[in-house]
Image (cartoon, rainbow, N blue to C red; front, side, top):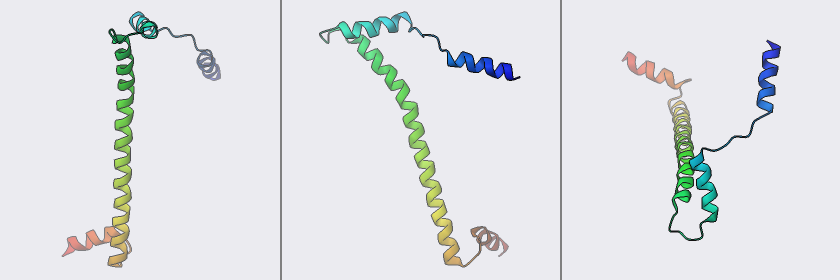
Length: 100
């Protein structure tokens, strides 16, 4: 088992050079050579790749922030119920209301 972990670590420690697909490699090379903006296809391709990378991370960050803010507001609400009701737990408030 140790030799498998060692082999995987060795493979991951010695990465090979990765080549871009021919269309992307040509687009990147051509974007540096273009002096005018008549043919901005390579630049548009690069920007679309950046957009495809940024949008999921941005959506994840916004969703994470909303969950964090909701949990924080929920904790403040539970603390307010606990202080106002004099109960030991907000769950007791729910169980007492259901009994009547």
